[in-house]
Length: 87
Image (cartoon, rainbow, N blue to C red):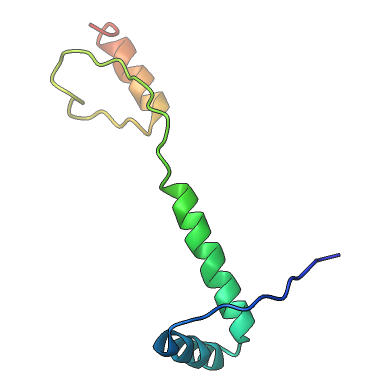
């Protein structure tokens, strides 16, 4: 059973007008538009929280060599075996 709370909020008049127009254009209720906007804002806030940094080891070299496709594991292994493996 979904529990809904009734609450009162004060919105900027222009913002409320735009939200009502958007709701009418999309065939949705004002409540649904506001709920979706709030969910999106909360999700976006969570996604921008600082992530734990993971240290990555790096090695000297000239970067990815011509003909190397890092998305093609089979070709990468063939190339490494052909060239005698990692230097």
